[in-house]
Length: 567
Image (cartoon, rainbow, N blue to C red; front, side, top):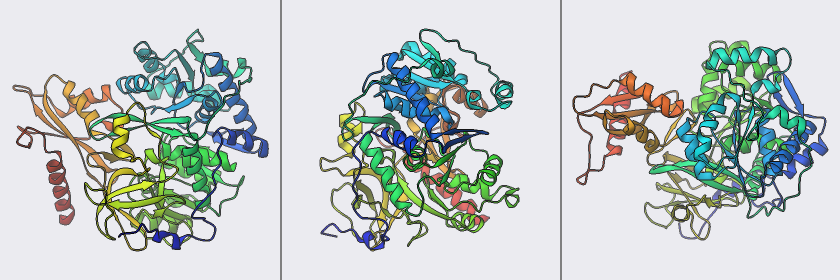
């Protein structure tokens, strides 16, 4: 192709404009506006407890006021290390109201991962669950953290669940943590009770000021903080609202399984719900039976998710016992959506399930199939409004022909400002004229529908989680009996990919898979721990000694395909 073309525009329904006008104001303003418009409407449902938008806004003001009293000023980073619970929503908007920058932190992180993120972000305060308090307290001396705000699931449970839950928690996690209010440790319940709700105004430039540091990773390095402005997040949320043009303000109920500490859940569930006045049905972790029960009882209309979630529900033995007919629309992300899963889920629910695509660096969505229009199964769809996309030829800044495989590049108002304190790495992926190199390989057909053919070179996507091999390898290399280690993603019919480690033992070592597994579980989040190990005498290498990771990947892929053909 010579002149840049946008063939996808011809498929846009009349309700979806190709260009939009976007609000230029702070993201937190939407919570205020929704609290005024739908103050008495239920904003959150959580394990039997409900909060109205008026209550969520009031508690967010309490958090903001308290943070300012602790010394949080404009631009200070505040970490939120919470699963999907009322506190995760209240804390998010409270940080923004105080003028801070949210640093979303995975609650599954181990101490070394938490310490790295706190050091890199320079977070001043962390808000975490009580069971995570020991981790936060242990890393605090090594970081810039000054204050820890502690909350618990029980803080929002109705009676008698709030009395019973601590015993369940102790049995489940073998820990009972009882932090006390002090000069640097603050209890959530104390915060809500003692906060004045008086928030000093903060002057925010939506186009320039950051709302979020969302950590991603690199295939050759440690996680990077993606700088997303208020405007980045607002435009992607407004795009999502237009894409879901049949949805009604103040009427929808959204199943919130996607974690808010992931940018997909944050935008497609939390920010979109606040913008529209939707009710969020919060689930702190995925359990198929619990999800089916909640769908039947709470009747969600929107269900953003990932393929593994839909697959787990479809394969649940009690699926037919539950009524899922309330679901009207789902956008699936994080991994390819199998056609048979799409068809089965639509048949059972009567709703629409389509595949989309995006990255942390793009707030996140750039492409999606139309929910109520032309779609192509197996495709990631077409670019969203005001979003351009191309295929660049390998190692070149020239556009590929239709059907030619190359690197997907995107440009739009949802593209990040850059990587936190990493100008060189920012320049490698973001051109001066705004084109972002995704690192994903794909092609576009003549109608403007895009297809992914390969993922980022080394990144592993297992069960919707992004796993970066070097992080896992660094842990393995710390073991005294490991001489060499390389980690790859291998095909897995359920998780998409699973983590496999190839190990060369040190001489005279008899280290076992179980011992390595135990070691890894002590030093990193469970979803990163290898599920498979293979011990070898040597690993394939180049002439200069670089391990040939791709060769191992191809070997595993060939073995998997052979086993599939035999079956």
